[in-house]
Length: 315
Image: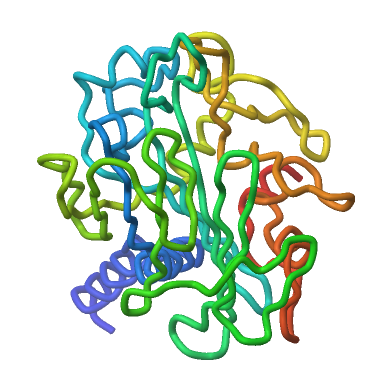
């Protein structure tokens, strides 16, 4: 091999070695983002005012959560939904969270019922049947102090929770109904007060033009957007109200001081439907454990995770 050819050979080897490579973690993240987009819910949001519009936590340009009530009238209310996907040997668990800067009432907040920040969520259990997107088997929605279970498979039965009905679909996407004012999420049609904003997933985050509109929302990953800030805890920061999960310090709520202190749960801070087997946080951090307690699934159903970065970080 002459010197010129050898030099070209060495250069080629260096270029290959230095070329960016798609890591396994990136591939998993892309795959999960595709799944989250495929199943992203159609949201029927009751709307009496723009306080019912969904948006992102930093809608006001900062990650300080105890000024969100004050900044709601002037912040960017473009529509976002937070998502997360974890995976066991048999299932994907898709978690979606809807954020509102204000939880409010029709009357005066002086009479109670209002608080700064509001994060309500829903979770899907999707069976990995060998197809690209699997088969949706069950949905759980959160409304204040309760979790509601809905079936998308005729062999899904109640467990700790009773089945409240069947999942409603628009195409392959589940439909959810979100209360005006308090923003509880349900899987069955609700008599929503005021106007109606219909949110569907898209590439662009749009702001409703009025309380009767149809717009698209964009997805944001919980792991990068919220979980990565879990240590920002205390007055004047993003989160507050410490709790321990498997000995690990986590914030249970968004920091808030208007009409009550720290009233809105973080995705990993929910304390609902624990029964005798679950701990605070299991609904998000260990969904295979939580959903298999809440419902009875047809076999196979594995609780062994092949991807759960939250438990990996904790352990």
